[in-house]
Image 1: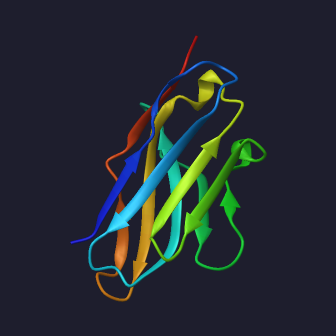
Image 2: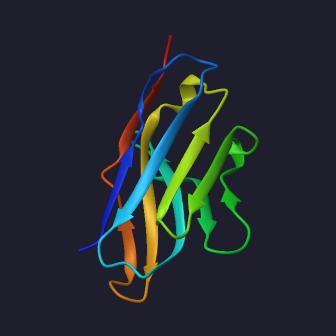
Length: 118
């Protein structure tokens, strides 16, 4: 079984920073892309950033310049550094892993809440 687990959410003041982490475990041989999406009540899940094994990272438009995604290909982990947070960034953040080879498929974590409020 493939598991995707996020951590690092919480409450932060406007202008603050937060770092989310994601780890993929199980019988995984290759993760093509790893990334982050977010969702608020009543809205569709939207792209934050997604990073391929090799190649260019794709960022959601409103996140450019404030959020940075990194990943460790060998460890099947990814992180999202979020800076200059605003209340509109409040959402549940989900990690997605696009697995290839054994257990191929798209896997999602359970989500981690990020709340930006004073």
